[in-house]
Structures are given as C-alpha cells and as structure tokens.
Amino acid sequence: MTSLPVIIGFGGISSAGRSSAHHAYRRIVMESLPLAQQEHTLRALAGMMGLVKYTGSGYQTATGEALAEAEIAPRFREQILKHTLIRRLEPQYFDGDHMSVQLNFEIGPDGNTPFVFSTHNSELPDPLPTGWRVLDSTGGVTRIEVSAATEMRLESHRRIPVQSAGQLPTGFDPSSLYASRFHPRGLVMTIVGASDAVRSIGIDWDTILGKLRPDEISVYASSAMAQLDQYGTGGMLQARLRGGRVSAKQLPLGLNTMPADFVNAYVLGNVGCTGAIAGACASFLYNLRLAVEDIQSGRRRLAVVGNAEAPLVPEVIEGYHAMSALATDDAVAKLDGASVPDWRRASRPFGDNCGFVLGESAQYFVLCDDKLALELGADIHGAVPDVFVNADGFKKSISSPGPGNYITLSKAVAAMRSLLGEDAVRTRSFIQAHGSSTPQNRVTESKIFNQVAAAFGIEHWPVTAIKAFVGHSLAPASADQLTNTLGVFRHGILPGIKTTPAIAADVHREHLDIVLKDTDLSDRADIGFLNSKGFGGNNATGAILSPTVALRMLEKRHGAATMQDYRRRLEATREAAAAYDEACCRAPMQPIYRFGDDLMDESGITIDGHSIHLPGIQNPVDLDLPNRYPDMV
Image 1 (cartoon, rainbow, N blue to C red):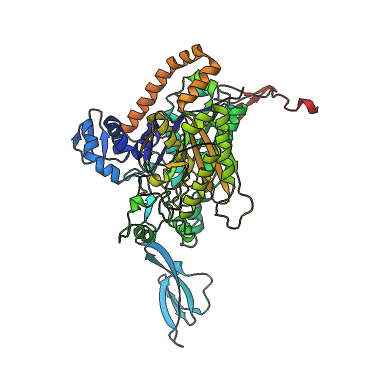
Image 2 (image 1 turned 180 degrees about the horizontal axis):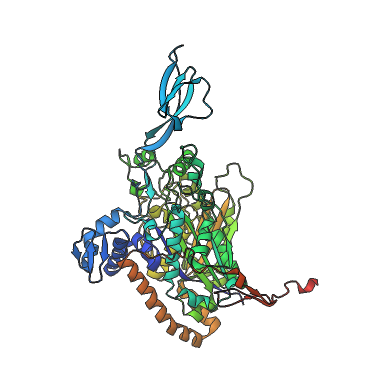
C-alpha cells in the first residue's frame, strides 16, 4: 500500500499574522467570519503586535490600562486591520523616502592649484591614491596635498519608487522572542515559524519521536534569495564597501539551506534526512514533493517542510524593480487616476495591474503517513497525494513563462480525477493561483487554467490568489497558498481577490470563476490545487485533499474500529493544540530554540552491524536494509 501523506501540524508568520489555528487565513476573510471567530483572531493579533498582554488576572494595554478580554477586539480592530497585510513600507525596515545610496564623483584641484585637506591617520588609505602627497602628520592627524583628480564615493539618499510591501504585523518583532544575536531576519522567522508548526500539533515532540527511528524523519526547507540582510550574504558583500569587516557568521548564515539547517540544529535536533531544494517562486512545492515522495515510498514516516524568506531589503526591491516586475507607486496611482497610490491595493491579480508586491513569510508544515497519524491521534488538516514539477524547455527570456505549467496543472487534475472521480474535480475543486499581479501573468496563467478546465469538462472553476493580501514571498509563496487552503477546508470560505475591482479584459475566463469577493465553498471544497510559476522555468502544481476526504479514505483503509479509537485520542490532541493557541493569544510566542542543548557525545555511538544506537535517542537506526535489486544479483 502507498502511504497517504497527511498534514498534522502547520504554523508560521506572515503579514496576515500567525498561521497556526488558521489565524492568518482568518485575517484575510475577517469580514466574512462569525463575530466570535473575528474576535478570537483580533485578540491573537493584538497579543502578537504587543497591543495587549495578559498579566495572569486579566489583560493590560501597552500603557498599563486594564482591559477586559471582550474589549480587545472593538478597541484595537481598526488599528490591527490597518497594520497587517500589504501596506506602505514601514520605517522598521528602512526609510523608503530616504534610501541610502552611494554617489560616485570626481574631486580634484581647481586648475593647476593643488588643494589640502586633513584626516585622521587611521582613515588614510594605503597605498595613497595617485596625486596624493603627505605634507605632515601631527597628533594623529595628517595633512594631504591633492594634485590630481580622485574618484570619491559619498553617501546620499533618494526615494525608492516602490513603497508597498507585505510586512509582518506592526509591533511584532520575531527577533525579540529568543536569543537571536546576529541571526538574519529570514532565519529568525525560520525559528519562529517552524516552532509554531511543531507546537500546533498538540502532541509533545518526544512522544512522536518515541514511535519513530531517527532516520524515518526528514526536513526539507529553503529560501530562494538566501539571507540578504546585514547579518547574512548582503552584509558580507557590503562590509568592505561600507568600511566595515566581514564577520565569521555572515557567509554560513547566508546560505539558502539554512531554513532547513536551523530547524534541524535548533528546533528538532534532527539526525534524519535533510534537504533544501530551490525552484525560485515554486520552491515550497519542490520541497513538498520530496516530502510527499518520501512518505509515499515508506523511506520516511514524518517530514517537516517549509520555507522562509525576508526579501524586504533595498537591494532586493531594487533588483525586482529593475526587471519592471514590481508595482511602483506611480503606476499604482495611475491605475486609479489618483495622485497618491493605494498601497493596500497595490497587488491586483487578474485585474488591471502593474506588477507584484514583495512580502515576507515563514511557513512550515508537519506531514506524516496515515498510519502514524492514527496511532498518534493527530489532527488531520488535509492530505497531499501528489505534487508535479516541470520545466519550460528552451527559453528566450529566463524570466518569461513557458509550457511547463500546462503539464503540472493537467497532471494534477488528472491525478485527482483518477483518485476521486470526474465529479469531484469538476464540482468540488478550486485553484490557488500563482496570481502574481503582473500583466503577463494574468494572461498566461488564466489561459492555462481556462484550457485545462475545458479539457476536463470543468465549468465555473473557482480561482483565488492570496498574493493580493500577503504579497509575493518568493520561496514560501505556495506555502502561503497551502496555509490559506487549509483555512478554506476548515471554514468553507474561499477568499475573494478583494483588491481587484474588476477582471481585466485580456483575462481568459470562459470556464473560470475568478472570485472577487469571499465565496462560500462549504459544500464543495474537497480539492485545492496550488499553482506556482517561478522564474527560470520552475513550474509546480500541488493537489491538496480536505480533511473530510482524507478521513473518508483512511476509514476505508483502516476500518471503522480503528477510526473510532483514533477519534478518542484526537480529543486530547485538540485540547492541547487549543491550549497552545490560547497561550500565544495571551503572551508572546515562545519559539523552540535549543542552542547547544543535549549535544550528542559521539563517543557513545554504538554500531553492532544490525543497528546504530545514538546517545539520547530512544530508537536505533536499522541497518538490516533490504536488497532493492534482487533480480540483478
């Protein structure tokens, strides 16, 4: 039997807030939720943003004012809504109106007359530039005569043309949650996001490890752009140009493998399989495919999969702007015929648009095989039966779309038709579009959707695109889609693309229902297709099953008695997960960060030819491996 990979935990942080317990999803569909659920998520965001804190006897505002729990949502609602999702870039990142730049210019003598200046000895270049001569040096200060033109660089400032971004909620500083000294922002987000996913399970990690051999676990995660802020590769490349020094941490912490490495080393203590595959904007689905195939084959029984990206640095914004890929302030304002851009509505998938909006995100998911999920009594939030990846073939422009996405989406739909039947695909599926909000994407992606829908007899195929709300987070973009899809399964509401006032005239939609308002799918949300189109010809489509479908499949495989026993254990799991959620609502999130904890004494490792026993790890590594090629020897 092929094991079914099921999702038993998920968490992370983005501009929509905390992902666990569906809070990030709820922020996006806030106005369509019952009042009690709105208030719950607003309370979670208020705590995350430092607007309130729980003292043990009640809540207090940041100024010390006592506040009843029921007062939090109405008191801070507008402030929370204003300072989440896509909005104008805030000064905590950098001042977009005064971005630091270096100006190159020449300075030299006036005619044939040299000029003289003084500087501290410690600031003298060595060797001296051509045309410089030391006149004298006294008290640590040297006088220099300059007789030839010298190229100089001077720091200046200018306004960056792109001011909209999907930023973490205002007031939330993930680096304050643990001892994050000199960690790049993307890796800080890794620790917080992966911890949220693990703790959302509602089952103690050591209990899970007790049922697994150490090599039955895998971790797959990456970043597309690596870590480009001052504590990673960006700082390393800038150090000498800025007159500083390269640190010993900047190069290793800048690697794009670190969103997996940090999870292994500081969150899980994992000694199993690890990997970090990058596929531009499709990176999450590339990593998810590895986990799914691991679990299906039986090579691994549990996998932690995710991505983290923190691209809100001037150089990355400048790079995408140079490609004409981003929505500039001027172009957004022009769309509305206004003088001031509507930053919150800068991303407009499938509408008249002008480019995408960068966002930051860290999203992680815990998957395991169906048998282990039942044994643990884990809550099943969905299942991932297939992920398809294809390239584009020969290309002229490396960033342009191509034929690969036709293959990935068609195969995903065909696989679900084979699994659940034509009716399920035609009437109970929806698409999470890549929906990057570029004029090219709205045409090419909608054409693919429309053509595939026609081929499979699908009419009015529901399509949404959550980059409208959280922006384009690059590597985790499809992880944002998956977080949102699990919310659709839980609450039955497909988020409308509410930033798009109308669908553009050149969008192909004869067989599509591109939703512009929140839409009730509560009776027809069995399959979610995650679609991703990455630079370089990286295409991927994942098929996600609802928990209702997954549990129905498990009952057919394992029987009613096993499922009844599972449901009894599930009650305690859900109680523990709810307690974790409440703890996050009342106090700052508590990441798992085990720096230097329980280091393994390698001298205690024993190997007996049939197994490897590792100190501190309950179960051994099995060395009685089967011959996978019996017909060849």
